[in-house]
Image 1 (cartoon, helix red, strand yellow):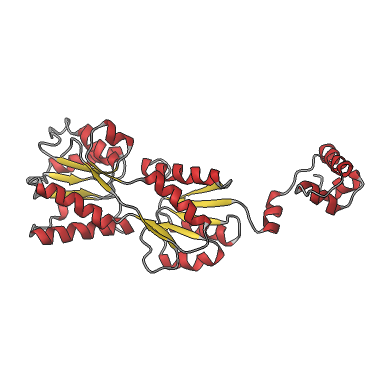
Image 2 (cartoon, rainbow, N blue to C red):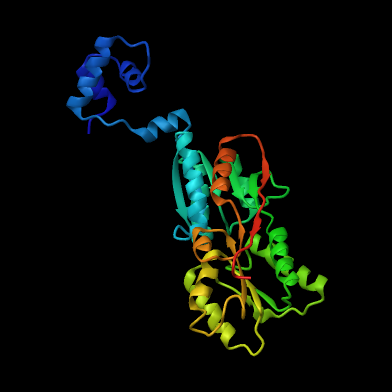
Length: 319
């Protein structure tokens, strides 16, 4: 494979001149530019972009860590991030981790090795302390409340929006309320669980562990929840679903288990995905596309910033 020295020899110019032509330097004589271009074509020379990026110290690549690519929640985030990236003439490198710490660490190592310039963490398993340590190698932005860390972040207060949804159900007469969650050890999940326990304590309602359904993320998980509900002697009259996807799964399977929505089971989803519009699901709207754009803007800015984005309870037909 031809290298830059081969091109210089064939064109009858110096290596420096070839480099200037490749980098569109304005002060190169027209005849030399033409000679270099002709030599490149004849030799089939391909510029080593990695070497160029290493020399410049920039790749114009931004890494995005997310657990799943096939869920609409993360899909909308990526759409927002991708749109902002195109405006800034950057490309994205996606790391689908499935909450595997080893894979998350691989993304951090890519930042350390300068193979990406910046990193956006949409959801994580590794500790905040580890992220802070790696932020010395490039800007890291997280989609959660980073509190007192030295990281930029955008977040939704899941404690507040969960309490809002719970109070909404309570005001409509519900006292046996359950909720669905994906993983209890996640930052946002912990906020929701704390909001749930505080709500029960404030209203002097009993805590029933059977009313908490874990590993709920997709449509099919909704049917699994209904299957569990159908075996209960005393089941909840209302549920807060992990997402609109889970809520839609519950609605789809409701006739199979002879449960009417909302008469037998009131239901609130999360995120305000398109499926919530179609199926008339009461939900907590989170502007994920806009959040994605904001996360990218934070990643491009060296100054520290903390942004809170409000969620909105959207009343429809499932409560």
